[in-house]
Length: 413
Image (spheres, rainbow, N blue to C red):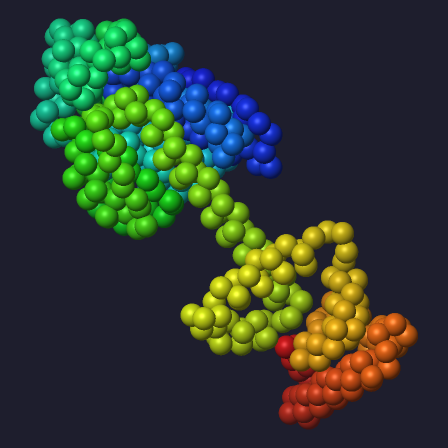
């Protein structure tokens, strides 16, 4: 087995974005990257996805990819896709694939979860067809060429009446593309599907997943796609009315809308996760593990959203900004809390100020300066709370020294 060489076309984002995520599009057996033309045009005009970098990759012997004389597996096709992605800049990416392209996309999500940000499977499956059926297809192509598949493919690929309605449009051109596919490469692709079966691994797919099927598809039916989505945690299935196996070509507007929704939601979810992780690190660094652990343990269904809000926006956004140091933010926070009379928060932030590098004398100086503008009663209350925190810390330190004189004092929450 060998990893084939693949090629494709790359388009930068049509609009600038903060990260310019990458979307990789993979076609079905017998088609080329042009299968995605209608979808890509609509993604480019959608504000949610206009900034995407889009990489379309052709299968061996299809479109612009070189022919393949040696056998390969779906896993090796996935490795070949990664090689093209790395040439385009690397990193994690969203991936969508049709039929064989979907099998490759699924393989990427299972075998390389760190590289896949979201997954779209259109008219595909964890196993497609039967080994005998693919062996027969490969033998037929070797004997008679891909031109012999045109009539059968037309009935499998498209819903009844589609080709007649569109005239010489994308559907008719896809059949011309099929004739141009290298016979041996097509046969090798068919044989790679014969051994592919990731059904047992669907519950391990850990990325946002969308399954799209066509109402009239007898190859990967809506029922089979529904079963696939049920087996993938959190996956969603949508059947497109009036479409068949090449649903993304027949219904590009509907497919583009589904993909735009999916990629946009995945990006937002990923950003929220990053902000939450960053916020939790800052929150623990400022307030201490003990305090945060108590707050998390006390979370109820009614307060969960508020805890998420605190972590993501207060700590992951404002407190994580580079404009002020944590030490400076502690000064501002103590001043604000004292001025606003928020006495229940002052003790926590006196401890945080000490953790952020302020000395006791500096904290007292902050409160003295605040008294000048916030008023003596507010500052007097804050001084009382400060003294209580210092006394608690001194008592804890004395108790620790008495019980274990050679051990360092424990971190105060």
